[in-house]
Length: 542
Image 1: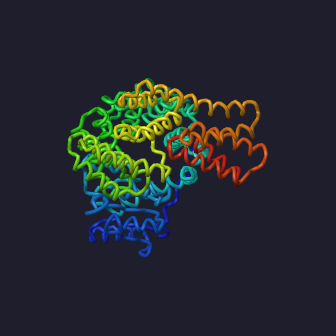
Image 2: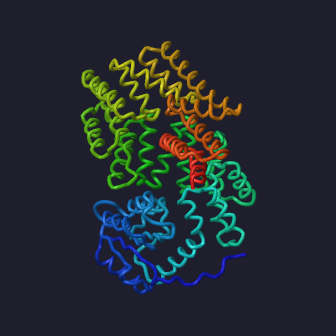
Image 3: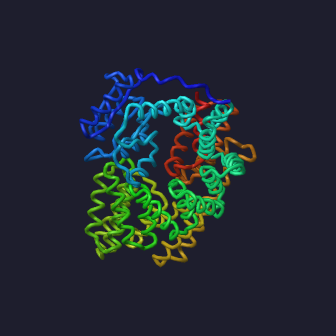
């Protein structure tokens, strides 16, 4: 059964934002919208990216007509990415990118952030009306699903896709694709794998291959995921999401040489991605290809100047690369820019660690030790828990500057947080080896690993024996002793929710669960159980 015939769009009820740096083009687009039936007072205009973001913060528009080139400041792609990143546009908003640019890198770059349409100037009333009719018809059909996605209720969104599929065959392909995405986002990888296999048994569908590869990756089947993705990027040479997932798999396999090659191919297709250039820089730096790393980091920093996707990591990477290229003055200058542009204690400690290592490499032990001491003081006063890579760098700095006690504490903490991560344990041992502490370090690693495992197992065993209150107390202690251990945090949340489901909701315990899960999300943003457990908390406390 197909969907019923869509009624013509009532343009008089719609509101629009026009974003163009030329007054004449804004006037032309306003006149076209008026001809479509849009009321003049429902049309807002912006001459640059900053004005556009300010208007999007205050208003919800039904449609946005955005030029790609907006002069100084943000371009149209950066306005779109910020609007989506900050949820400044609702699922019903039709975003149309309008430009005279026809070059592949511009088109590919804009398409990555998924505007609803991409129109080349000049445009006509008929062209715009036809495109908007189609966009809004589809958005109306997907409205309830899109709202579930915004609410991060991915399993509900998948069920809504099934309900829609029963009556809407015209959108069947898109509904199946979206259902697959929702199952993967919810961590429901088995059904996602079955769905993709069923589709691929009938026809060759690129998104289904990507979904199947993601399911393999989630299951730790890296070879299978890699084979699928390598074939996919050869068959679909502009499928940038497939390139990015292939890089993720290659990094997990520690095949950085191949990862760099894939990133370079993707960057040639779409060179204006802040994130991809940063990742390329990181991989090149790990491989010791300093010229390539410098080029990629500089590109990421430049592209990120007006982008919401700008990250401290690109500046840190550039500083480390400059230091490795024996240019300590520029490295310190980059770190100075970093601390001015990014707030937060986490950035502060990362910058101090990088600064100390720059001074150490430059042969200035006094400045290096001062940076290490400031780093130790900041870690103590702020309670920041850096990620594993930053932790190893900080420990390395402290070891070379004589701050052995705090270095050992950092490394032990890294082991306790991920006692089953053999790759991390190996890197921790390398840091000890580099400080001529091989045997001592090995003993410390093993002791920390055993301590963590015992703390985790204590709560789990009590859970299995049905001693829930004792298990909860044990897991709470483990959370306090192992605040960076994701498995412990998730086990605590799971047990607390199970107890409240069987007895009664304890508001204080529910708040504690939310706090533990917030830590999980900060430490591992892609953790599949986070959304599921948060949804359980919300359901219990409604």
